[in-house]
Amino acid sequence: MDTQQKLSVAIIGAGVAGLSAAIGLKDHPNIEYRIYERAARLEEIGASIALGPNGLRTLERLGVVNALDDSIAFRNRSGFPMIYRWVPGHWKTNEITSVDAHHGAVEDRHRTARFYRAHLQKALLAHVPSEKIQLKKAFASATVNSSANNVTIFFEDGSSANADILLGADGIHSAVRRYFVPGSEPKWTGWVAFRSVFDTKLLDGLDDAILNEANHWWGPDRTFFASRLGNGLFTIVGGHYSDPDAPDAPYKGAAWNSDGDVDALRKYYADWHPVIRRMVDASPYTRQYPNTAAPALDHWSYLSGRATLVGDAAHAHGGALAAGGSLAIDDGYTFAAALWHVFPPGSTMHRSDYNVQRALSLYERTRKPHTDRVISTVRAGNKAVVARIRAGNEETDEQLRERAKNRSDPFWIHEHDVQAMFAKAIAEDMELNSPTAKI
Image (cartoon, rainbow, N blue to C red; front, side, top):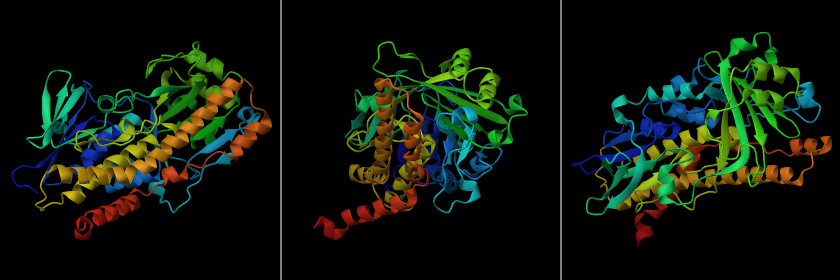
């Protein structure tokens, strides 16, 4: 690599994706990075987050083994990723009707785990020096400096920073994505989640099969999720589904992570099984999270190949299928791995446009086909829900049984092999950049 200057990376956003990318780069002697976070303090927004075997394996490759510890990562006692309790009657009788299962060989420490988001972020931050993070830096714009072969990032406070590569990791409402792709803001899907996290002690005496498993109930017009988290915490997630285009849709325009009405939540589940009512009654509060999603982007490369996106900024699928956390971690890992591959330590590889573009293309070819498939799957599911609402007919027992029987198995998401896909992309890259390919 050019000995005059290290390759520099500006990471916009200190969430799961941005921190994963930073951790992947931290030991490279010829790459320096800095994280720019718009918040005044590092405080993870949200309630719970799930990581499948793919995300947990990648955390281990990154050296974030503290995140796999049972103190913060809850895994189902049964070994199944999810227990389903559904079908008319069953959402009232609490009967188990289905389970998800791991398909490949999965070691215990890599079994699907659920976290309180703040615990996971803290585990990641333990691997990033605090001086690498600048707070109160909200992204405004960016431009290419052709003479210097780098980019300049401008922030809302009037300051700026230069870097060879800009990485947008600022979440589903990404300012970086909106700047590069105007009109790409995710739209409300019609679902509002009501989430709360509280001390498991508030549920003393509850059935052990509920307290030690992640359970998902399906009823005719809504669902309910409950799971233990780490450090003695428990989470519940209720919801309300509407036609997002209806002018009088409840919660239309609701703000993300805003105060919810716990009494309204209790009314929504008033006729559900007593186990569910017990959990809802125990919750001291609820917060509301309107679900948003956007179509897949055409590409992730911007600023003449010197900028790209990771996590929800790249693929705003809305968090369905409990996939967002692992997708973000795999994105960050692959971005870093691509830079290690194109700019290996000790090499004389120059920080040229061509080499930077080659690295970011390698990253995108590894990740985008998979995340596009996730988005397509989620969008199809969202459309089906809205279609049922617009039809105005409550599902019969038989119809819901049929939907249950035909539900998609998300194992291809949670057991996705990012290393195999990266190796495939490297082989393609080597073929494209071989001497014979340039003749």
